[in-house]
Image 1 (cartoon, rainbow, N blue to C red):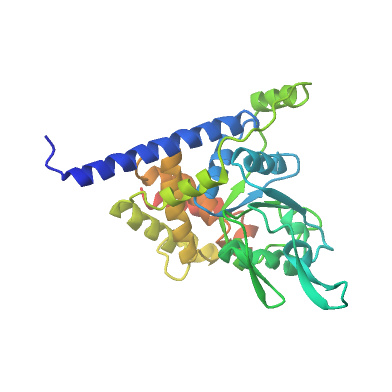
Image 2: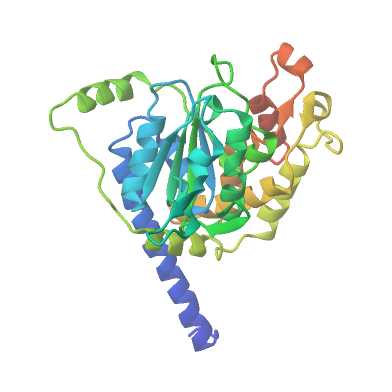
Amino acid sequence: MSNMPLETELSEQAAVAEIESAADKMSQVRDHVGKLIFGQRDVVDQALISLMSGGNVLLVGVPGLAKTRLTEILGIVLGLSERRVQFTPDLMPADILGSEVLEESNTGQRSFRFIKGPVFSQLLMADEINRASPRTQSALLQAMQEQEVTVAGKTHPLPKPFHVIATQNPIEQEGTYPLPEAQLDRFIMQVNIDYPDLSDEKAMLLETTAADSKEAESAMTSDELQKIQRLVRTIPVGESVVDSILRLVRSGRPSTSEIPLVAENVSWGPGPRAGQSLMLATRARALLDGRFAPSMDDILALAAPVLRHRMHVSFAARAEGIGLDQVIEEMCSGLI
């Protein structure tokens, strides 16, 4: 018989049951999205982990890799109200946030009325975000961090939950603007999307051109998602995992790193928010896999998407063909 007090034993049993229930629900979501998005299992998982963590996600890839479709499917499957903004060079901040208009009543009294922009949704899709000017890109800064916006001196809360999924063409593409570093740091992950392999592309070709192609259906509600987001923050993290996250993040800072590849080639490294993001993401990944605590494998799997947009290699390093993924791989090898 257990020597554990009955109340503690019952509370632990309830916590285990809650985690198992959440894992089953997310497994259904993952399977449903996987039937509609072909050959991008890691991409789907990383997007789900970002949303389970309560964060925003940046999808990067050339046109035609289902970035927009993935966002639309996630909105439907997770039961979120969704709005889409197509970012263009002439887009203004008011086109996203909304604006105040002067109205006159029947009695001749004039007053301002705030007309909400598309940011007032639970899932905002910022399509091709790097097509807009930095001024317009930064209009999302307050919304992404504080889940509220200030217009004409008045603060307006956003719906809960609130997430931004932004899509971006590779920066080398014509007619794009680099995102400001402060805004990049608000994305919990940068998920790079590559071309599917032959079998997956063939399956996609057949399925998406058929007369009866599958459509997305809701698998949970926004309230259930918020419950899972709260649950993620209660998952225990071992001391060794916490220390490994700190070691990894701090090793990416050139001024203090003991890794020669970092010290010689990185211009600036990840800040404390990177550690916070990695901590939440490892918890969410453990829950997504039905585990009760994150491990070193979670750190290694999520290091690149969490860190790659929070670091920058020097011009000389890029000229020599040294990329961020190579640097992050070297940082991870120091943990093993």
